[in-house]
Image (cartoon, rainbow, N blue to C red; front, side, top):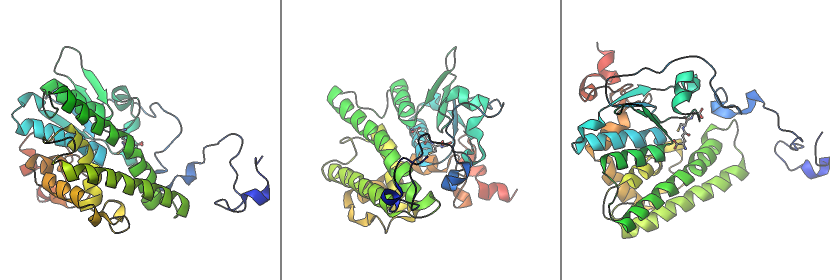
Length: 300
Ligand SMILES: N[C@@H](CCC(=O)N[C@@H](CS)C(=O)NCC(=O)O)C(=O)O
């Protein structure tokens, strides 16, 4: 039974809608990812994850959250950390790969990215992109400042990004690009929040070269895939709508980081959309970038 009277619900969307006393799952009503979104956790099917020979096993997809980690791994390798060699396995989230028993054992939250560190006697699982960046930074003592004050600043921006992504992606991206129809209220609500976040970052980058100061850190690697996607790659086809050109310092920083060779490589790993030469579905070897991108495989 509806909890409001009809008159009070006339302006609701759809008109007359009132939240029921107890929410019930309507599988047909979730927008673009309705087939994978569900209100329960846990696996849906039995399947082990593949395991390669490198110390680090990554299970991921090149969404902004996934790209954070492949950028970090490519940066570590470029900086000479050979123990950062990794196998990157493709998890197709639209096909429900994240609900296999194997994946859930590495990430009980069923979301990419998920990492298994097999370098010790017992494999260590790490989930949540921010936790993975921090784990790798501490493991290799890289891309995180040693000075306690600068380190704290770096972690503040890392957690700022982790806290803001759900507004930008789950809020703005969902209602602007993925919802089954356009709704003014949530689009306005989350466009305002997304522009506020862009302005926060823009004001910071007015004073600093990188997000957390003078050096390139995991805070940049966390922020770049989300904000550069909006500013350089027309994510959600929203560049004009959000007027991203006006954030000139975010633009400057986005463009500079986009030119790093580890970033160019990291963006390609586990990518299944866009130009074929930018899609490296799985990465098991450094040379895969030269021989296994989809344009190359198509000619085999
Ligand atoms: N807070 C998580 C969010 C991860 C996340 O939302 N992953 C998405 C892709 S970007 C996903 O796997 N979605 C699959 C699903 O929701 O079933 C992180 O940063 O790792």
